[in-house]
Image 1: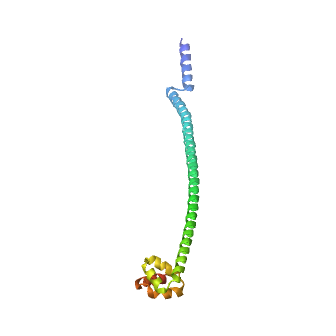
Image 2: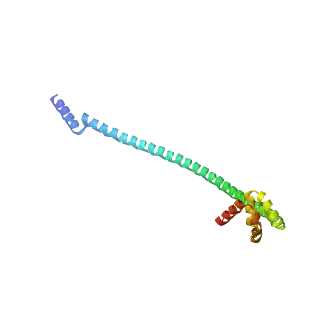
Image 3: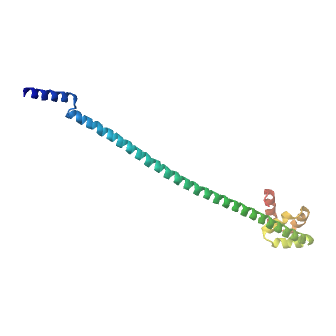
Length: 169
């Protein structure tokens, strides 16, 4: 019996010597937990990266949608600018045509006033508003204006002179 107890104690000692103790088991368990956590952390990182990638894909899709909307808006604006430029050219053409017609009417009236005697033409010109009178005087030749000035009221002649000298017609 002594021998078997001794053998048991020796075996227990050897096992204790080579086998990990309760503290060592805890440390081993801790390492296993850490490895599991690291594996879980890696899985968490993968999930976080996947979520970030998904966010970037969504943002990229949103940016593409906005870019397309901006391209459409830009095309619409370009079309509108082209329409406005065409309208502007049309208005400028109409304005030139109107000015030409107006000049023709003034030329016809000037011919009529030239055919009148200077005192009769002066009397009629005095009855016109100042703007019309000035426009007619500007379109008349110098010889005709010289004949008419004595018969036009002085304030109107002076205003025509001021505007002509300033370069405004």
